[in-house]
Amino acid sequence: MVISMASHTIMMFTDRVFLGRYSIDALAAAFPASMTNFLFFSFFLGTLEYVGVFVAQYTGAIRHERVGAALWQGIFFCIPAALIMALLGLNAHGIFELVGHAPAIRQLEADYFSIVCLGSFFPLLSVVFSTFYSGRGITKPVMFVNMFAAAVNIPLDWMMINGYGPFPEMGIKGAALATVFAGTINALILGKMLFTAEHNRKYGILRNWRLDFDLLKRFLKFGLPGGAQFFLDMFAISFFGFMVGQFTRAELAATNIAISIDTLAFLPAVGMSIAASIMVGQSMGRGDLQGARYATNSVLHLVMVYMVAMAAVFIFAPGPLLGLFKTTGMSDAEFAPIMAMGAVFLRYVAAFTVLDALLNAYMGGLKGAGDTRFIMCVMGSLAVFVMILPMLLVFKYTDLGIHGPWLCLVAYVAIMAVIFVIRFRSGAWLRHRVIEEAH
Image (cartoon, rainbow, N blue to C red; front, side, top):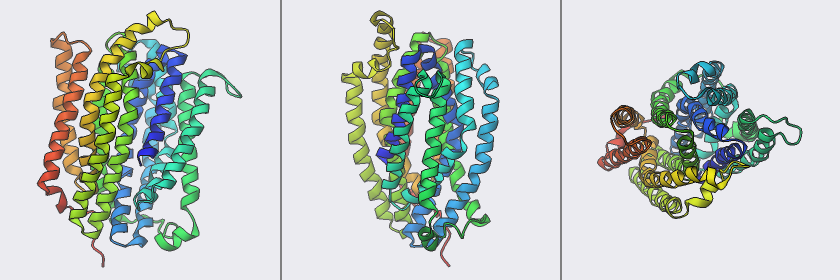
């Protein structure tokens, strides 16, 4: 799962690198545009990922015939989700007019956002298809397909942004189209692997295609709070991005670069969090509560080693990473302010990277057991009272400048990590029941 998420990291990272080399305006627009897209997409992504917990718990309970039915509830959910994303894409200009960025950057933001929103159906479908494998603990197929999609995305980015090969120069639109194509390829390959006679025989992949209202109700009961939790978290981060956009172009570019580099640490940690959810889900399906605790603690140890190593790189070797984003033709003197600010911002990134290790491990364990409502309430409260309101107050009443939003971001992650540690150690999360009792 770490390598699978790393492939998504590579796609996002190469998008930003190619756009940074193409133009600073394109790089400045890419972060708020992609974050706004992911803000809305995250609600559906967080909901659909919970199909994997149902698959895990049915697998742990040795009720394989219910796996196909669980998958189909997720597939049906993709249809209204994709329609809502498309409607958002059609109203891209209205959304970004609310932000107040410079007109040139606002146009680029709307271009990127509209394309990736209109192309959301297959990326959503690929999430559901991947849960069939990850929920059963068979993660290599997902890894290889994600790696292949990332490998396709890189040359497409280069050609479509800059206008090489059969493609015209499209700039930020090319980056968006390359992302959509990669997501479509991912879904088509996983679909081809999933819908087979063998899987139908054991898991009811084809014969259980109908709506199961009782199962759909349970899926929405646990999945929607998971989606809301993801949305609220991304809303807080997106608000951070928009607040940063009120500062100078150099400060905005340096922040975008620092956050882009952070994806090297963040998304693999999310992969570990998903792994924790799957292992806890399988343990809960078997009724093995001690196994659920052990799985979560194991993930914590692994992700902490990874995150501490990444934090050390961000602190002690920021130069090579920041240099990747230098625009072609930009002099060292022009890039020097961005480089200096980026090095400072990477220290903030290093701080919340280590805190993210705690956060993702314990949140994954809680989600796998069905404690999604608690997670949603915590994230909603902290998003308002630790990120949004303090950031507005800091911006208006202090002279901290761009350091104010960064300090709020670190505080947000720190407080959330502490709350989830306390919740996990209390054992209250063990009382949930996700799947129905077997007859």
